[in-house]
Length: 227
Image (tube, rainbow, N blue to C red; front, side, top):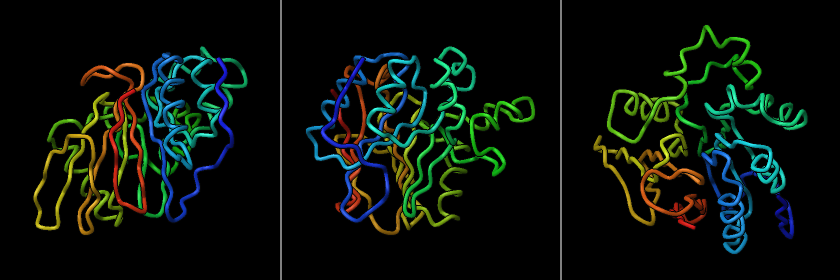
């Protein structure tokens, strides 16, 4: 499957950038193509893919738009079913991407420093509990609070994740209140910590339509999109 954009940009954080962030395609190439066509109309400057991509057709689309990608739990074993070129690409994916003011990962930010790529994880798979690396953040839990603490200690006010197949957010305010967020938009507010689940392109569990988000860093706004 081919999908062509008029230009290709790398995901380098600059002032006034708009990012399309998507995750959990799970082999649904047509849904991913629909998301990318929609994003093309939204003045997008760069793309992030948070893992669980799937088959070669999906990987090819992710690579074609120049998305900064991370691996998810599907890639831990699913990379073997890809073409040799896509296997090499996938094995070199990182578990997280860190920008100056926001982080992105498939599930949670608890990656040991020595696990820099999927290949590193595969070499240490039996020493690393998968439940620790790929927890779910869609309900209030100890792991959600630990994620908030990790972000706060690192002075990172915003994190995007996939894995839950749900579009929702959590805001931890400067007066120590935790708020569950839903709706079409989420605003970043200074002094708060915001965790955003971007939903699923291929297998949404919170309603119909391929889901992704647009993050406008200048406006401090996250827009929840359904295609």
